[in-house]
Length: 278
Image (tube, rainbow, N blue to C red; front, side):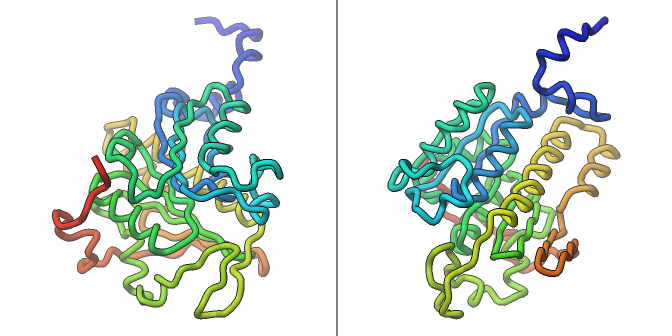
């Protein structure tokens, strides 16, 4: 088949199609569940839409605040007080008409079961431990790959989980002391154990969101193939059983190995776990 130059000039994804092994249809046919429509959610949705993801389900029950504006590329002054998920979905549609958005202004605990079942990958862009644990449990329950990211000032991290075999968020926090970790860390709110406001910076958010989106793209390529050797190769290049950490203050980048905890409740009997509404 002959491809005319004029055809490639009309294809916004022509340059990425040229990447060896790239399958654009894996993105075009994908539905990604993004939980959290704040700074990370803005950047992750932008990156995925730019890459050509077909459908984004955006979940956040919060409203836009003034302190969001310097880190959220799609929010404006006139949006303050409005629902984050709805506004982000509308702006993504306007900028990237090839991407369908399904915004839901509800808590992730109230999310319909179909949102998890219908997604190929879940992305956690939330700002507190309790919600992360909830998402972690839901993804374990429905066997959905999860890409979790978080930031604090000049520090950021990303972890990818493929249930049930890989180390999950609860495996890591259980080892670190879950009782301390469950203190609510939210941008703009005071942290009781430190008595200060949690710092946030847009450049850290951009770096973390780029890695999260990259993980999603690799997972979509992984899910489309059946060859076991190829699947192992792709997974070895993801952050499964690893945590990518960045310290922009010291210009340090680390990838730490994570161990699955055999006693982790997220890997145990989840029949007692309360699944989202159906």
